[in-house]
Image (cartoon, rainbow, N blue to C red; front, side, top):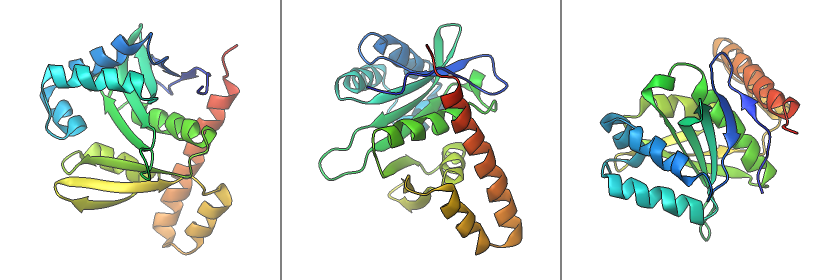
Length: 203
């Protein structure tokens, strides 16, 4: 089971919802196949072959991956994936947004919804891995508290889901004033996004 609310993305024409894994597999697959070469490289760390992406999408449908999609006119233009933990590993997240949907706050809305899904499942932390040149993804991950480290051509980090708003405010008290003010503004926006999700639960 996943959260079932439908969320309208802020200031953009589409909406965000969780896909049902088997029935809507083609929506994710077709989205990933539409990514341009640079986006594919960033998303899959160099793997560009169509057959690889088709196998990847099929595996997501079978292994319990939660897929949160940004949809415009019935077509997935962005996706956030929450992969279940394997053994002792952390659950892992991944994102992709088509060029036509960038610079529209889509990544932030997808990230907020995915964190809500992860908390609903009881996860305490998430792992994120992105290519060293994927600056947009690295910046987005840092916005949500990821501490990224560069290793072997990748940036890898974790996101702590146990922090409360009170914890975040305590962090601000020890930060420089300018940085603290910027972080407070971001956290306020983030919490408003999450609140709007739960205020727009589908019937």
